[in-house]
Length: 427
Image 1 (cartoon, helix red, strand yellow):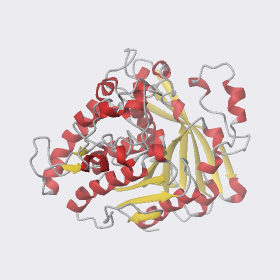
Image 2 (tube, one colour):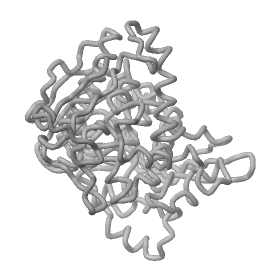
Image 3 (cartoon, rainbow, N blue to C red):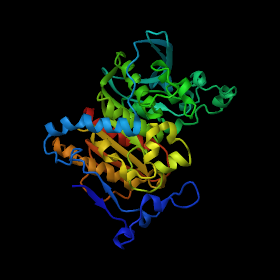
Image 4 (tube, helix red, strand yellow):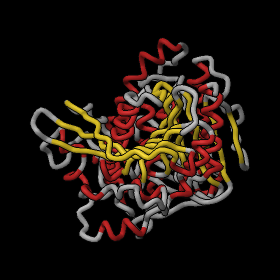
């Protein structure tokens, strides 16, 4: 059985469709009116592709690869494999950084193939200076580059090799420390967590022509691999950071959380699904293509990403554009993607003023995914179908957090992610 969700219009008998929503002459429309959401049906999360009910963990785990393959085929593509060879080069090390709170390292990850092709990404890592044994870690990517997390001029500007604009270094210098609010490093260190990040441009420059300078050049001569996407490339980068963290003696890589905001929230979700080494998946304001249902036409939609911003044309596999106008024809929706993380932990965040990301839709997806968590006997999950007006819901297995404010990731978000990690890693 599938879950049928009616809007106010549907109850009145005025059933709308995606085509109705987008029939205007303008190339796109944004709906922020709950009463104008067409009725939609979410696929039942505990049913396989033939409609048979799933009632045991064994049956779910047998079905899981099939569901994962559907997301690979129709939305994200397959994450590329590890390179043939990887070596790590220490670029810098600074003791007692952040006023004595952190050991800071910059490390270059060199990726090499037997055919001679090479690529690299630069990781910026902070480790609590005062620690007892190995510490858990948060890993993710950064919009712009590593230099944007701090005004410290000794941090290298990254992304240079994969941004051909001649004035990039000059523009990048102006962004030094620009996103410091998104990376409350001192508080992360005080809480006893390491943090490791890299510029997302290092794996796939965020533009339609990014293929030529992306990690796909390591593996393929095709101008654009049919099963490739920017989101899969960014997810690949998060996993390569974790590969490196497994070699760091101060870090407990078995207690790793993947984290991402906005488009990188979509990538964090996909990385967390595909790489089971991540024990906690932190998804922030990810919207459509992340945790918000594609069928719920509110705020960001597949149609807007493909036809307005044009970002969908490279963020996702090329064939997804065919379904952008008819998301109800997709063989899945995002609650099923979240369910693929189970029984590992997931935390979904949004903000009250971030209607583009659809806070209610993100909550709905996590709530529905809870059925799979219950199958595993997990109880610290969402129990109410109604989202909170603000604050937290759920627990250490699956939690939702709604922050008052705009599209961003702030200390308040980090505190909840770390609270969840404390419970999970028994800190």
